Image (tube, rainbow, N blue to C red):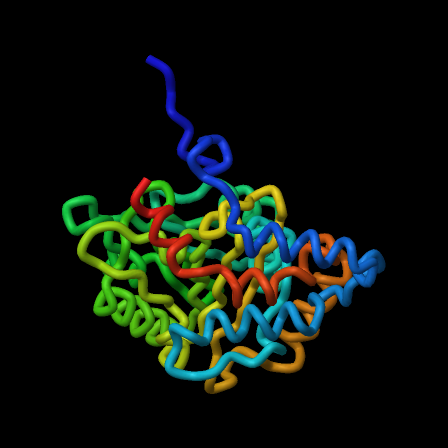
Length: 277
């Protein structure tokens, strides 16, 4: 039988999905202005970082600062940066099984040992926290959660996410929260951002415009440090992120410039209609 790939989700492959008018108009306006044909700062345009911080802060009990946001070429680059800045000799990372395959690939390129923890299908693909506890050691730098889940489509409850944060705190590790499918939630559990629990354990949130705005080809993502207590945001850690952004570069400047209008002007009806197709 034909194998169905669950590796990449491209909503544009289906004719019923279209970008919002606000998104299209924002890009056209930015391009026609002729103000955004040059290089952007490697961490992202200031107004883009501010707009993403304000957008994500809507669902958090604290206000994100623009300095905590790094604009990336899609969520894939955010994955690469997060693993690269955490890598060190002998490091290992805990990944869910099943998992989006890019994590394993990036880890192998950075010589990070991968240790897989299982998800419980009978419990809505919840994390096996006992396995996480057993797998972690003094060389563990982070654990990854993908919520809403890829490829399983699960949505974690507030209570389960809090337990994940508490486990990470006991182990002294960072939680990398892949939320590229944020707010695309079906069933009983609403989407809850992991960043809510950033005061329990530091969280690196990864996301993008790709899925919620139906524009994966625009390659506009973000890496965000949810660390209200400042336990992760040391000058050395911040400098490592900035230097890696210097190496990689980011999305097209005019796409970045459109982000404030995209996140502020897209109407809620656009998101609701998308979930009913």
